[in-house]
Image (cartoon, rainbow, N blue to C red; front, side, top):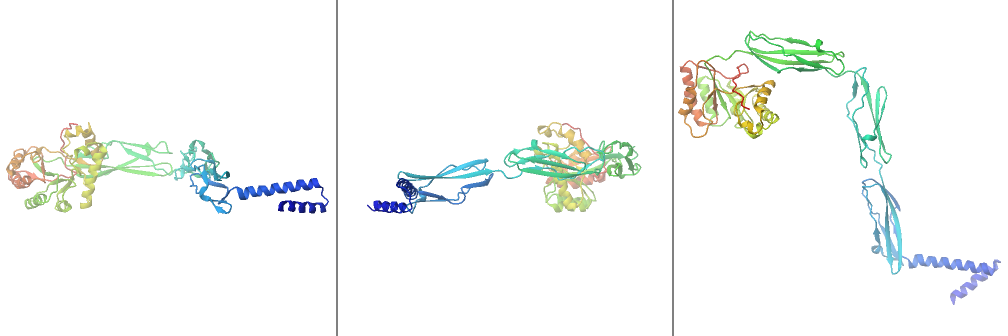
Length: 479
């Protein structure tokens, strides 16, 4: 009844404006439809409002964080009833839709948020930081450059190169249009020294009055092509005197860059017949090495100790300070490791060399191979390794020493001091040097030492320690 009265009033007002009844009816119908629309949308249908923007832009690999939303119906919060449909994969470029939907009775409301994942990160160009120096008349040869994009991966094949006289530019654009560019200046100047390499060994061993024969060299340069005739060779060798000498090689290229290298020449006296070299392996060991040092001191005899990584530092230091030769045996004495490869052997050797240097300040170059150079146990780990090692140690400036008399103290079983002394004494000869193998980790060796020394003195032998001037005593290589 109230609506009917309201409509009559509205028609009456419209008539006062001179609007016909038909038009009046249509206007009222439109008004009613609009009112019905408002009632339907804002009273009967639930509402959803998104927090944040309806369109969100994210960088590739950036984490998507939901901004949230709120749903109401007839003034009541029904956010918990909202369902979100869809996901965002920020590892893949593209546009994603997130649909938010809420339903009350037979009425529902849906709203959409767009998430755009884009790549705005520039690719990375990987290139050496080293300045480019070229020979004066050289052409520019582009360096190897790598381009990696976080999204596209390796795009090195897209690199473009622009070369000017004194500048080279590398640029790359990824699939999303992001561009990276690096330029490097070019210097036409020869700053590289010539390369000199010796033929033969870096160490030459001569005996008194031997003739020194030059083994030659190899020379090359990045810019100057012919340098062989420009190499100067100088030496101070005097084969009439024992000592260490040097052969110096020097060369300058056209840009005055100079290289110098040296070859070491050691002139020594051949070993005297009837000399006894007492050598001790595997030490030091407390309770044995220290007593051996006491005996040697009392008897006025010098010896050679082929040391390992075992035992106290102070015994090595004492032996060195008392004038004995500290030589190198092995750090680990682990055959499986030492003879597995050339690198493994030298890693072990340089380890014990470093220990000796830390203790004494002296860089030892005298060595004895574990098991001797004639050992066959190395075959088990690498065929032919002793053939290679015996050459390579000399090339690296070392000298190795085997033995021609074994005390027998390393063999199995129980021994007495009399047995050890007898083994050595019965093997001594006046017509050669006598390199005696012993071990300063054995009590019976320690206890036999004085008897061996006294016999040598009483029978016209004399004692010496191994030095770099001592002729190497080498056994036959069996591997």
